Amino acid sequence: MSFLLKNIVNLPRSGSINQLTSSFRCLSLTSQLSTRHNLNYKPPKIIAKPITPIIPQRSPSEDLKACDNIISKVNNVISEKEEGRLFAVIHLCGKQFKVTSGDIILVEGYWPPTIGDEVRLEKVLLVGGNDFTLIGRPIVDKNLVNVQATIIEKTLTHTKTHFKKKRRKQYMRINFQRSPNTMIRINSIDISGQIQANSLEKDDSTKIY
Amino acid sequence: MSILKRTQQWATFARTWHIYDCTWQNPFDSAKVVKNHLMGLHKPIYHPMNDCGDHVVLINTGEIALPGDEWIKRVYFHHTGYPGGASWTLAWQLHEKDPTMVMKKAVYAAMKGNLQRRHTMQRLHLFPDDKVPEEILGNVTSQIKQTRVVPKRLDHIDKETLENFPAIMDYPKDYVLR
Amino acid sequence: MSNSHLFLKSGFPRAPLQNGVGRYICQLQRITLKFCKNNGSSRGMREFIEKQLIDFAKENPGTVVYVKPRRHRTPVIVAEYLNGDREWHNCRNLSKEEITQWITLMKTQNGSSSSLRLRKMWHTDMPSIQGPWTPFTLKNPASNLVIFPNEELSKPLDVEKSATEKLIELFREQRLSEGKLEENRGN
Image 1 (cartoon, rainbow over the protein chains, first blue to last red):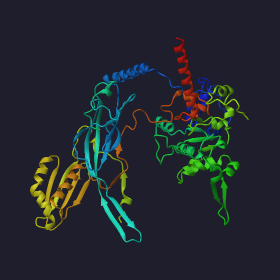
Image 2: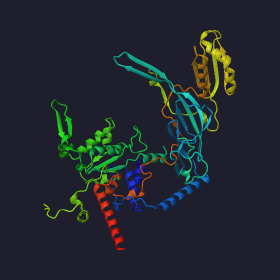
Image 3: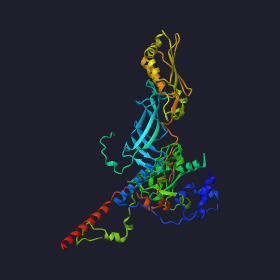
Image 4: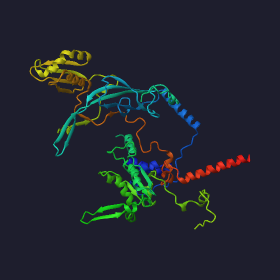
């Protein structure tokens, strides 16, 4: 750890970097620590004017143009199969899981599918690759994303003890319970087809939310 | 752990330093915000068992604004442990003795009373005015937004704005301005 | 009160041998049904063997089924798995339906899982794809040049318009409309 720290401390001394960024300043943990390491060290003077981050103002037409640009870039990546490993946030049995291919997830409680069944998880809230993310509102179009999974185990949990007692009231109950658990393997996450800018205006009367 | 992973771990758990200006802020509302940053609750990696809290520098704690008549009604209790050792201090008296104390106690009270609280409080740095040592200010990389707008005093508004301000009504001619 | 849970092992979800990545393989290798031919406690088991066992064996060609009669002892199911686990279950006085349920459970699980408390409902080999979070992700690079304390950054985001500002706005609108009226008159 200390050699990394030294590197960071030495960075501002070298003249190549004229402006020490705040993030680097932050990484030097505490100033007392750095001074303890080399007593002659003096923090460099930062010459910068107070700047407040400015959000660029765009007109609606420029906005649309930028949007189209991004969508075409993502489409390009998908059509050339360069998206790499994808991840998705899926909604399953009232819970959300962030999954990628090869993952194992568990569903608690009764769930009909049995072992060996291959299912397609359709409630996909978000899909992402290395450098893009598609966010559903609330779910991504089911023709666009295909999340395949296999059920690999249906079992019971360990025995849970439910013990209740009220003091001085002659009341004591004990129950034992094992609830079903289903283990699912995520096989693949694919994006099939192209992303459309106006996919929102589609007729979504057939969807069940 | 490889060098790359170690650096990743280091970057993820790096402690950020925040600064918060207490001028004209309600200490009890501010404490809720400050507490979140102190405990690291604002981070996506938060887990009660990991140590991801940040440092918070509170400046201008002397300028806080207590709501209503809290300055005279709020009482801080202390007991020395000996018989007759109880003492009650009003908020304004405490503030006169130490202008950082009201804010400190507000943050302390905003957190749950567990073993972690005193260690979390070590990361809080309070200053009664805006004179912060260079070595502390040099670490600061972000500013926490205040909970309310700082009101502007009438004598701090420049003359031009005052003169150009629209009059709601005209005074009668025989009205005497005192 | 049972204290057995105090010594319960805990772990994380795992599947044996990458099961389900290519195809799914049933982990149950052998099931042994032990029963008595004339004892009342084995009645359900005998019924199961008479009516359902052949169907079960046909449906699961990958599983070996042993039936072992023995005199005057309680009926028992023993399941043996691919990972070497052996699960033993007492079936004394159980009905045919109950035995069916237990056998389906043994068929569908990957090993004896009764003694493991799961700490997570998720397992992954790839915890992050877009890179783990750090305090600097999605930060505006311009924030590196800010000198703290900064008044602009300190202001709250959701500020309602004050009465003064509303009044000034009203006044400006009024002046504008008056100016237009005068222009119209001039025309």
